[in-house]
Each structure stands twice: as C-alpha cells, then as structure tokens.
Length: 325
Image (cartoon, rainbow, N blue to C red; front, top):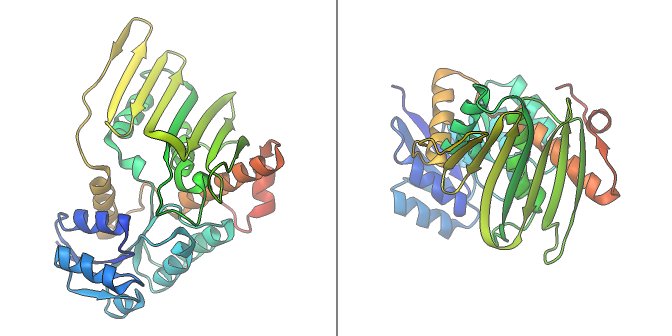
C-alpha cells in the first residue's frame, strides 16, 4: 500500500481534530503543519510528532506532499485550494468550500483541468446516523419523501468571524437536503437576520423541490443548548435523525423502532474516504461540484433574506453562474 503524505493547513480547532484522526489512518503520514501563527503550528506538530511546521503551506508543496487538508478561516479556503489544485495535489477543504460563487466556480474549473482529488468537508455525510437513515430512505422504508425539517442551533462558535450562520452552519443541511432529495431545489425563501453578531445569526429557510416537496432549515447562534437534528417525512412514515447522539428512529402507522447505528466517528470516516479516493483514483462522495451547489443555494438564501422575496433557483443560476453544472 503506497504511503500518502499529508499537510494540515491551519492549526486551529479543526486542524487539531484532523491531526488526531490522521495519526490513526493506515498508510498515511502527516509531514507538515502550516499556520501563520508559527507557535500554534509548532505546538500541534510536537503534540502529534509531525516533523515539520511552517507559516507557509507552499513549503509543503515544494516538499512534494501528496495531499492537503485546509482548515483555515473560510475566506482563505479558495485561494489556498486553487494553489494546491494547480500543482495537481489533492485537497480536502473544510466547509464552506468558498465564500463566493465565483471562487467556487474557479475551484470547479481548475479541478476539471488538473488531476486532483477535491473533497469538501461536509462531515454529516459521514455521520453513521445519516448513512443509516439515507439507506432506509433509499430502500423505501417510509415511502416517497415529501418533507425534511432540519434544526442546527446553538451558541456562536467564537472561532468563526468571517461568515454568518448560513454558510457556517445551515450549509450542512443545504447539502443534506440535495443529498436526500437527489435534486437541487427550484426555489428558496428565507427569513433571518443579525440579533447579536456582525453577520446573520439566525435563519429559517424553505427549499422547494419539484413535486411539491420541501426542505425546512432552521439554524441559529442564539440558542443556549446545542441541537443537531433532522426529521424526514415520507408518505408512509417519518425517520428522525439525531446527529450528536447518532440515533435513528423510524415511526410508522403501526410501529416505532430505533435501529442500531454503527458507532464510527464521522471525521474518521470522512478522512478515510478522502484517502481511499486518492489511492483508488475515485471521485469523492462530496466533491467540488457539490461544494459549488451548496454555495449557490446559500447565496440564494441570503438574497431571499435581503429582499424578502422567493428566489427562483434557475434564474439565480443563470444570473450568477458562468459555467455549466
């Protein structure tokens, strides 16, 4: 098995988590920690026995590192990822992939031109509760799906200062809605605003899909207790998913059951998937195209919040996109 060398770019909260997990992945060697705060990079390198630490991630490019995990502030994701992709290295970009549609388009275009594996850190795709819930839905356990309701609430994560709750928090459920419905919404309507923070800190959005189906998304940084949950309604029942406790409940007319969920750390599953895709030359479950779609829908939600109007996604895409999806 060929060894994959990895550099971690950003030694903050998520950089530390990735370092911890990567040390347990077979066939992977973490060689560099990169952070503009060199003391933070050094601390993380010493904690996990990573040989090199540097302020500039381009030193790891010069050293021939195979893959990079980008955990820097959101507004730096695109520039760093584009530099890595142009060197035909592999990259896992923590969400959001980019903070603007133009940046996300550039990543999609560069990935198409280069031999890079590009993956976006939508970690909930690898939550075993979602995996089981999606498997049950695909098997028709609750019949055709007509509605999903997601709630992702809690206090403000102080490490986040460059994006609001839509692109930091709700974007997980934007991605999951397209994953569950196997389609993009046809329109978006949202209400929200900023009560205690510089950028929006609460949102309630309705994503409408063809066939009178919809996804309701609630997210905020105001609620004292953290909750992460999704309830999916089908014609024959409801599947409820608790992300934090990784529990699934299936409710039907004559029964309610809680099937066993395998206990796998989502971040470990996500990183292993990234490494396997590199090793096998496979496309990730959630790549740059999914990252662009999520960014596009998030921006449509923000436009609806600003204007107070329903945003038609086809018209929005025609206006905002310069490439064809």
